[in-house]
Length: 610
Image 1 (tube, rainbow, N blue to C red):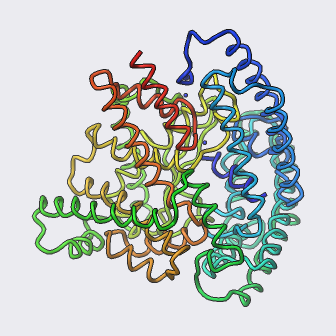
Image 2 (cartoon, rainbow, N blue to C red):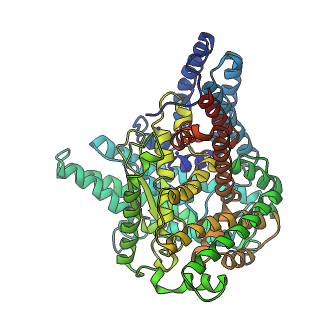
Image 3 (cartoon, rainbow, N blue to C red):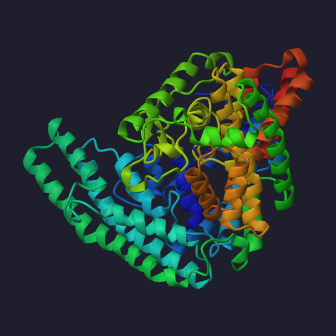
């Protein structure tokens, strides 16, 4: 179940563009076998989609619009059994050697997804079900508010049904959290505090308590009011729907969250110490190694990743020194970090106006870069992009910005979310680079293009992002933006180096925490010694790594591999190298493991040569 929920959260994040790599003169046998396999993939995609009404909604499908996924361990077992049977069926019905290059990659991806699911099942008792960083307790209300669109009376009835269904799902998730606790797996105290705080905020305000409207109630009333305003229903029917929604919120949602609050509060006494890496938990070392493979899609060990991080931190410090000298700062790099961290010129005002200034600036950077995209990409996304502030009930001081995808048909835009509750944790110098990472040419381009792909099975184009690929692309896009003429202000360029340093530090800190016995304070101290990022944001980052073991390593490992493949293509193709062709090839197969990405680039190189 936890693995399946992770896919949902990612696909809340996962061009028409044709897949790359196939030979137009492929044999008839290849064409026929590939067509049969692709038809089979479409059948299996529909079967898989039936497991997840939430995923259907992300794809703009309203088939099970009033339902929420089954979050139980039993459902996870059923999904794994289905995936195993499907893989066996594929291998018995089709001949790999008769497939086109693109179809072979789809075959490999199908088996890779099974491998991921098998690992998730093996370590089911090792993951954290709920925690402070976009955990399940905040995901469900965010989904209902932002992703369940209401265009008809039936849609509103489905929304109310989903309020009731969400209460059931939350109960299942709490049971899973209790089961993992019995197995010896509990996240650190700050994760408990975050779950309690977010859950409390969700059920604070009308209709749960006195005061202002809660976020869920406000969204509910807005959806009903729009139906009345548009003449789809009359006011009496609107009042009746509002009463039904109130009942679901008060009688179902509130008790579900109160149960979460009560159990997490009571279980605080069972936590061994303030913070710890997963290697200290039962089966933790094997679990962490599995997480490293899952997130990097490589066989790199924790020690190897740690050493890569140390090397990159040293290199980036040298580049930071050069900018410090460029702006004629008097003092060493540590002094410059303090200056960048504390000087008022590097922050917007710490209020709602400052938050809006941040959103406006991020939007402008993205819009300004749009005109340059055709020089670097042959295929551009159709979907629009908006920048928004995170909803109050899940907003955290200094938490990382993130992206959630729109629908494949473009009817809902992609959204870049920023946590802006503490503007002193959101420095201006990294603002530009983060806008490129989350927006264009980063996640919005990569995920929107994947969703708009034609000619590859839907399980690939809409199956969620593989972290090493998607986050590797996001970090690569930060450097690409410099090549496109961004970061004219040296402090913004220092912000770019800061975010690359940030991702390099992650290699050191994540492995330090989970494989080398580092505690939270040592990780925070290392982070502060090598970057100007405010301590509030640093502490939020370190706590994120503690509850998402291995995920933080995917960014830099993925970026380095994309740069290696680009260098290889440039060297082998010489004057024939076309940056647009390279980028279209990288993005033109959807989100893939790094070894499959290398196959795609090799195929493209040979195609250009011939």
